[in-house]
Image (cartoon, rainbow, N blue to C red; front, top):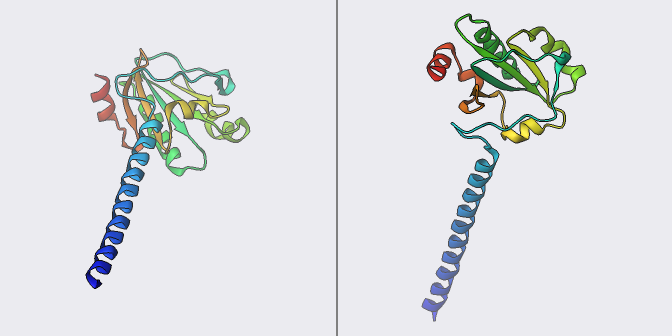
Length: 172
């Protein structure tokens, strides 16, 4: 009879282990599906339109062979560093790049910070309601997307990884 008690104890322990395993697998699947749903763009595919956008000071950047869409928030220090790097790339005479900075912050807050960046190659889109962030599935900053003239994704990721050599390699 003692053997039966031990056997039922093991079966109960095995059931508990199996439940933990199933729950862990479900959790992994849920996280994977959540990340897949958050990434709304793919390389080579057209990017979503940023609709209902107001342009800072009504200024739009001139068309170019490639456009870098940078998502920005003033509270993120890395976003500032990424913007500095991108502005230097846009100022490079060899580089035909347009920069669109997308922010969902109020104009009163970001205008003093971003207005000095406005140029023929740089524009600021005020994403009222955060629809642009949502359409691109932005989940971290700094985040940017490089697109060609037909609005197909050439590159996306952490903007701090972008440099002149990588930009030239991708856009050639």
